[in-house]
Length: 393
Picture (tube, rainbow, N blue to C red):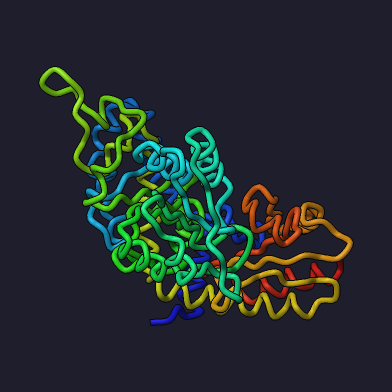
């Protein structure tokens, strides 16, 4: 059932930040709910009252409940979920755990790839004498599964794809890419940092071996939390570079890797934040990801329409169906300066540097872009306020 005005009013009443700012930076960090904040604060108070270690022992069931919620979000098994400190940390750990590259090996990715992932791949390829190659795009700017199929050979050791690029509203066809990688038996990593909490993510339908997402964006969870999915049958392919007494407990005279995704966790963890993440995921599931997606789509379309009618503003988004990330430029005004001026009016937007999406930004000749991202919390009044402020600039 679609979200009603009463639903939005109730959700906004549970979100302290909407009283202070018109927030169009949900794709960087969203506004947390009182419900999530309450879970975090409650645990911190327990730490202060009885000791952090002792409170952590009592929170074991809460952490596993967060893992269960993440598994439900992705249509995965709880043992396929690791809780990490950031998406980049999880993706990097999984990538580093792959079999070592050899000269001539190939890593296939897209021009939209997140700069952090690309950095990991490029450095590893340079050390090994391997190559990072970019799959061509369709006319609408999305990665071409057909082109990928022609590039596959026995030297391809990984296909990596950012589902929703950080610099705009494009949505890549992750499931179609998954069909190609499954048929070829090639490992497939998906960066779902901008997707989780915004659109439905079914790892079975996607066909990926690894998927990472973050808690702080559209899930509205705390910073310092992320989800790493590792397909059960792919786990033994991965040999973590670092382990500790949790990820590889000492048994029978030596360390033994855990036989689930927790081999990518450590004994020390931000317990309060992970409890908050679990609560944020449960809240998103209760609202309904499909309903969230429907409202975000409607609000982002309204925002694009409003911005397109302002002289000097150019929309930059590619793709057919678009996400809630709206990218644009303003004549005679840098994205950084725009962000600063709007902040003085208590309106939050982002300026996205080329490093976030270096290949695609370079191909399009952009050093930075302005980005306004909506949430299901976003109202028409907030969109009108942003548009009015833009007109005055």
